[in-house]
Amino acid sequence: MLSGCAGGGHTAPSTGTATSASSSATAKDGTVFTGYYAQQIKRTYDDAHQSLTKKILKDSKITDEEFNELSEHFSDCAKQQGVDVTFDSQGGMQTTYPAGMSQSDGDSAVAQCDEDNDFTSMSILHDSMKSNPKNEDPAVPLLQCLKKNGLAEQSMTVDDYKAIVSDENKDKDVFGKYFDESAPGYDAAKAKLYEACQTNS
Image (cartoon, rainbow, N blue to C red; front, side, top):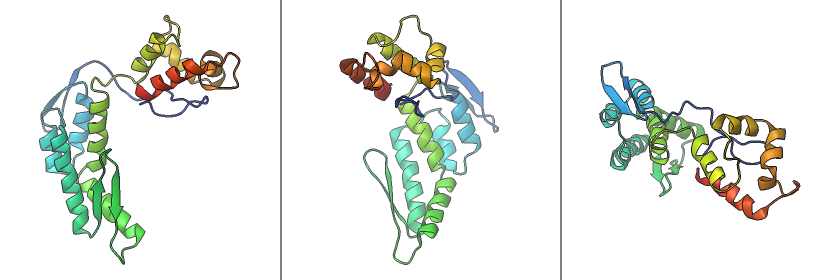
């Protein structure tokens, strides 16, 4: 799903460095990573505090089993500080602090365990590799969806799309009829398709 919000109440394209080209990258210790996420994996590997992180990343992949193992290390670390960390089926995290521990002390303990186990950086990388395996610019599949459903001109390029949604007035002129009920020519049926493209791309 795309990050950020445009003025019309829909998602705007990310300004990240995603690319659909497979590549390779070499870590400081000489380990070579390949694939669509080679550069991101290299950065995470080089910055890792936990040896398990480097072990997981050596093959340029993060399996669910490997991420679960890392999550257990993180939660075990927190438990040693008296904090109970659990995860729900959607990957959400809940923390429970023991009686007598202040919110700030509990947060500090969790933050330290997070850093020591590279949890946040690995969580973001794992999620990205699953949801966007080819590391594409998020605007690419979104624009394809809009064109497929007749919501954007077939000649529109990704750069055209980004320029439009980055300008509130242009955005309303071109796509307003799909997200603004007060706009002239508002089409409720196509609005649902438009929302689906924004949500699922």
